[in-house]
Length: 390
Image (tube, rainbow, N blue to C red; front, side, top):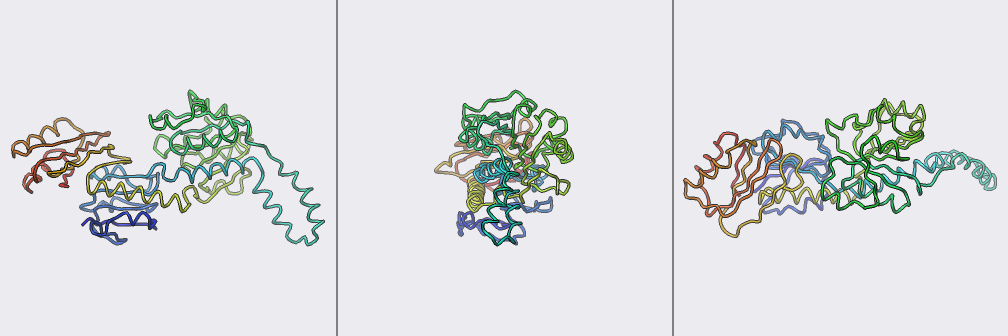
């Protein structure tokens, strides 16, 4: 039976995916084979003996020491796209709030609660509303930085609202390209996107290469009064540069899902408390996707939506058994593995091998079941990280 450590409050809909006869779920497992979590901060100490995989019910994995886990052969899964609709809707709300003075208008009305005369109240409302006159999104240009699951959905909504949409994504995948509307104009550079857009929305992951990506140099390309929306990750933006751009009017608004103490009380800043994926539907979708990926990996060795291992799928053979083997991506490992099996007269029925950066992963279906000695011999091959019999 697989031991699964659950951290944070995981949706029951996701937890119900685990068959109780095959999986034991607990929030206090000492030596789990898998961990299922949301935003809990993992450390290297959580990489206990026997840990095979971590399932993150969400897209970001900055709460997981991925590099260290990779060295241990621990597969880290995330759930890209599962919360995309929830984030998309909040981005649209941010776009609207940047244009129509809704928050300021609500604040204005709340201060009229002492006015008991309806006629006088109406008079004050009519006189005060002029201060909150805004603009329509229709006809404005939205720049989408990052055209993945969320960015492409935001682009579709913007097009439906009558906006012109431009986009930039140097790492656009084939699947994302298929999802993207032909009406989205692809820009040649990030600078070109910032120069042409009235509103810019960020949808790139938090990586060393994207930290502080939106800095003073990039913001200098924007038109005066540009709106910047950040529902991706706080560290993508250089806070000091945003504050300076707001003070000079280069930016009119900074709408963010990541409150920053340096931006408290700065005019033009609207911040929400990391609400992007905070819907019942998104939490359920993320939990179900993460659970299904862990289950398929633990039982069948298949990998889907890993951030550190290659995606790999092999249909199970109706007979025999399966070996899952991970190794450092160096030459001749697979040859040695197959030689060991051949020396033991073990016939390979089917197999698949893929690599990603410094890691390679193999699924090998064989006739019969290998002995413990054969598995130990495979594990002893130099640069093999771990071996499992499924």
